[in-house]
Length: 322
Length: 296
Image 1 (cartoon, rainbow over the protein chains, first blue to last red):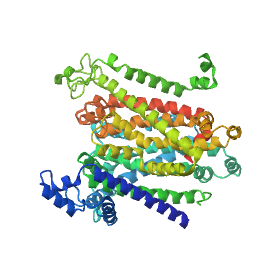
Image 2: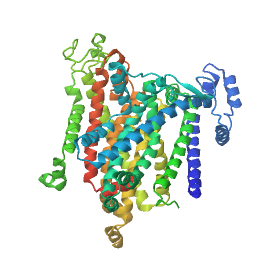
Image 3: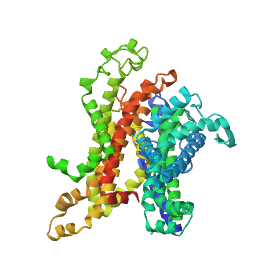
Image 4: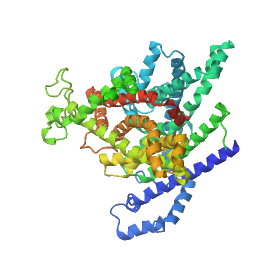
């Protein structure tokens, strides 16, 4: 177990190094940072001064090592646009994004697996076929369209839910503000969280159903029924546990997509998260923000993947790592 | 030709309601897109034909709707129906180009990696792991954000750069199982060279899972292009795109101008829904064992 975690961590560090190298190269060759820092109307001498002050006249590998050192210290430089440290800018907005992602993940896991199990028990019922058709629809409709349709239905027509920002938030520690504990905050969370969760929900539902249908045919399930075990134990302990393995893989793999689509969702609902910040940075060519965002999400994604790997072992002890 | 209609696959296909519905939807959308210049009432990207006094007209059956604009007009006075037809063209062009280019690259690399193993195999699979965990959407988005001048070609390039790994990985898995078959050993024993074995024996037998991947991927690519255009990093503003239409329409939903979003949205969903119905049928028709391997 420990060995597997260490291998995974080493692989993760290599991936991070590659990502940081790509980021750095982009930073170097697209758009001159000197122009951005010294201002468009700086004289030649002023430009040279900035260049040597920032170490931009040094060879590539020395610059890269400086970049790595700074990154390890959490120093991603100043945002071109706001002229304040990028790390603080992102950390301030990260809690909102994480809250949204966790809510969407919970919705899709609970509803996806729950409905998947229900549908698999009686696949021929009309209502269950209806759910399956709905899930096919769910994977055919892009996230941004769901968001806009939700706004049209629930705010413009029915006028029941808000669509703008986070609403009432409570300060927890430092920059961490949460909307989980106020009614207003929760009301603001509903539409974005469902928007972000629908696609995952449909994917997980279909996977759970497929896995369950396969497992329910196995001999050991027939044995379990024959022993007279209660349906609850047969379905959840014997069947679902074995059907969950591809579901967990998928949920882990989809986390990256979840982050990507949270950018879309945040832009539609004006959610004050890191994704919205990235979009602004992309429109304004604010490279330090883009680089920091990529590095921080890479670390997050790698951590989630490691967590999924460990979770695997608890669900299925048969899996061995060499 | 007749033999196609008598084959087992065709009989399964014609009996499967969702497969037939899916392909019907796709064929209709495809014809509409191909013949857009002929059937569209207006060329929405010819600035001379646009009049601002025609802007934001509702669909023809609502009060205020006018004759040539069956589904209403947008804020520039463009006919929605015509813009949708032209937008579908972009969707299909991007979709087909990506699955063909990414498919060829991915299948070739997957074939080589699976057959030869070694460093190419390790490198491809590591790369695939990284790209899978980072999401194609995010990488394509960042790639397009860095490149400033966009066109349909740039979008295709961005999606292909991250998209080929899906094909390579599936192909590799498929090749690994075909490689162990007796007829491959037989071909080797009679002295067939590697290249010939790969092309004549392995490729035809290992290709079928790629069809499923391509079908699923087509829908995903169409959605991705729409998402990128919606976010403003996709096609340029003077080219048609369903995603961009919805992005414009978003600004008018609070004013009750729902037709700016609903009709292009419906067209987009129809294309993806059609291909997904077809993909579902393909998945069950083509040897299910190979597909399962990909998941676990």
